[in-house]
View 1 (cartoon, protein in one colour):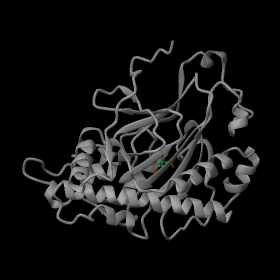
View 2 (cartoon, rainbow, N blue to C red; view 1 turned 60 degrees about the vertical axis):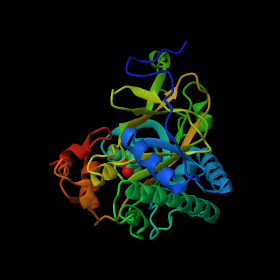
View 3 (cartoon, helix red, strand yellow; view 1 turned 90 degrees about the vertical axis):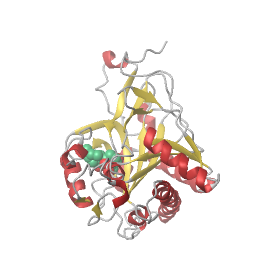
Length: 332
Ligand code: GA4
């Protein structure tokens, strides 16, 4: 029997599902409602070709299946662009049971650190697809909230200087053959005692600092989100959908109407398969000013946040630990 910790629900949460092929005014309402109530929802009929998604998944899994030395050679610290990481998260001592590839996803960068050209074109096609999904959703959010300029948010991530990021996360199963899965060959720090636990937090709780995240995973679960009551809710993976979540900057630009939800990834002790997720974090250019459009600020709802640039917010984000509530440092 699986026993959840007291802070956690066993039953997965039913996230709102938004059909992007439905009538536009309906989609607009659903996107706004889901962002206000959950800050996290799934979209289906999103228009990204199945082939683009399947190639991304295959290329990711092939890469992570390589021996650790090869992965480090391809993308590790030896590579001047160093996109591969194993266990470390950020620069302030956070660790996770995860290995990853992290790419700058702006138009300017064009994934120049991906040397094999077939991998590069797969990643670029995927980025183009999910960026379009993100922009469409942002436009519907703006319109749905009565913002006159419906491109006010999407323009920031369409900008060729956008500081967006693409991340592939690969989580090994706990019990079986980690060495076959990824970078855990010489990992002896898992004691008997740890093995008796039900799960392990593989990527610690945090909010995403950017505007909007478009996430997809294979059919292995592990994502959990924390809603108002503070309990962790498991999310059932749906590989045919994208999960969309509000980032800190969108919380600021909606003057708190949408909330950037805390989430984490766990690995279950009874799972013997690797989870792989691909996340696109849509971000503005570094010098963009982050302010709510005037319609979001009213006498009843005065401005909650100080104005700042993404560069300022990013600097603070990277100076803090993963789980820290950085947005609180920017309130009025
Ligand atoms: C969380 C969301 C994205 O994965 C990420 C992460 C980033 C990193 O891994 O370099 C951060 C983390 C994330 C927020 C706090 C800082 C920065 C690690 C960390 C401790 C790529 C991002 O943009 O912010």
